[in-house]
Image (cartoon, rainbow, N blue to C red; front, side, top):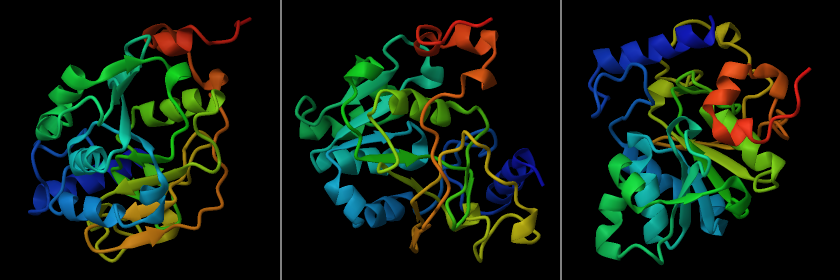
Length: 250
């Protein structure tokens, strides 16, 4: 089973059941799920959350409660712009600059664009916690996203600048359907059928569902930069932050 087959199985399971939440359909996206608020509350009990002054969080709907909780707790949140389309590709949400009554608006997909301050990678401070959106995960820390690879590129950019490293905690909030080796897994078959992570994949430290927190105890190495050889000229040209920093090609 390859990663795309896993994605399709998870999306189909959400579509067939009553666990999916707006936006619909779940296919082609990080699926929003019933209990996303509860998962965010559970994440907020983790010491990694309490110790982090700065988060990087994905902009997808299931992590909306995470972004709101972070700002309400006085944490600065960085969200990458879609497809890293801007030379200053990270949007900073600073609780000191957003009135408390406007946090709900500021943390929506459209609100992030309105309230977020475009920020160059060099100006992103040390990140204490990364919260990633996931389609599928395993209890030993493997993560499958929606297949575009931007989350791993964001890590690579920030890693080369020292804003994240092997000590940076990485978490996700998901429904139990997305825990591929869990009791409610959307994927049939044994764990041995699941795809192995790629070298550029960033392993997870915490998998948080509405019902439980899994500490993965992952031993997988994290990328310490960008795998430039894996990027073709077309993708480099489409992402300014990469085009500006890419080494000379022969």
